[in-house]
Amino acid sequence: MFGISCDNQASHETFSGKFDLNFPLLCDEDHSACEAYGVWVEKSRLGIKSMGIQRASFLIGKDGKVARTWPAVNVDGHVDDVAEAVARL
Image (cartoon, rainbow, N blue to C red; front, top):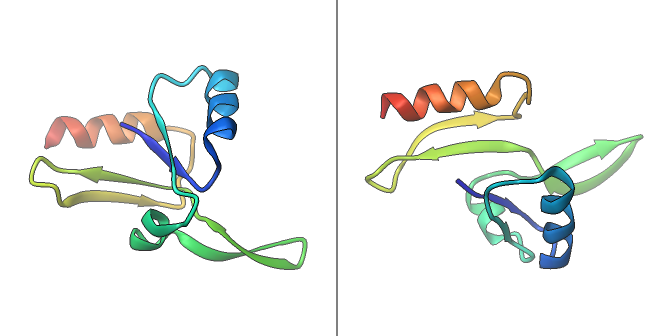
């Protein structure tokens, strides 16, 4: 398991330490991975539009193909849902 965002390595280290993450965070500063997975989208906050990441999860099977997606992740219960899907693979 790993996380990906467009933030730089220093930002990832701060975030990972703050939340005591036990998985690596990868940098996608040019948005190429986010664009490939369709999560680099236009967002609107307080009436201001900008591009950003739509939080999502992807389960990759042993064959290297996407086995399941969770678009617009709801944090509550997400870990259990993903664990259940992994167990079914």
